[in-house]
Image 1 (tube, helix red, strand yellow):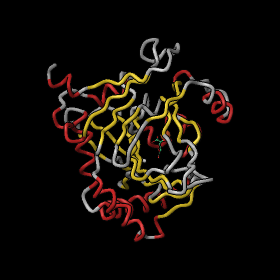
Image 2: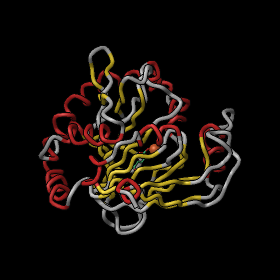
Image 3: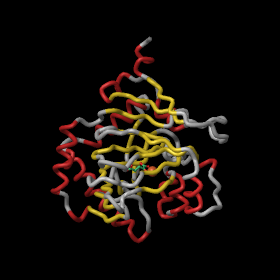
Length: 290
Ligand SMILES: O=C(O)CCC(=O)C(=O)O
Ligand SMILES: [Fe+2]
């Protein structure tokens, strides 16, 4: 077996075939596992494959090691309260998704402060490390944070999800633009045919808090039904729980692919950092924001 074949081990986590129109007639979960240390040996644009839906996810094992994770978790006790925001599932550190025009200035101010604080909390240049991953996956494409009149969007806010309130109901990334018209201004910057979710798990709960892929795509989803009805329909599709360990980074087809995070059942909160990514309109760069 040549090196590339050895490196690229496709795990076909196929559940069933459905009859979507997106990229042929098949739908199954193709998850590619790569060790972080092997990333720079790649020489194909896996990012494009992911974007087009030939791959559903790229799971980068041990993106962070145990020491890096412990340092981050220990530093969480020193966070500035100004950057902590209450959410239905617990709280975020750093702003996530603009959900109202009134809050836009606050969002951009918090994004700027958070960017500095994220690197401090990590203890190394986290932005640089993420950009290098995207460059390795995209034959060295330019990767950047988009901006709105000079103000940068948020980069990898943290979610702290707690028992009893912690879950993220079924959704896909593209439906956010229907749910929150306020986040549509990013549409003028990105190719909106898809969006890649990038998720870094930092702490697992003892039970629950699993990322689940749902066998349904935005392109096959009726556009005239309410979010609640769509969520009920999504929960009748086949689902697959995705194994992640603290330190694993997963990039997935989250713009199109429905997914959810199951209820947190253990005492330990689930901590994750996440962002969206897409090609810029002219495909000259890859943009990362939240
Ligand atoms: O697991 C998380 O923290 C959020 C996952 C998610 O919905 C996403 O990254 O699109
Ligand atoms: Fe998502």
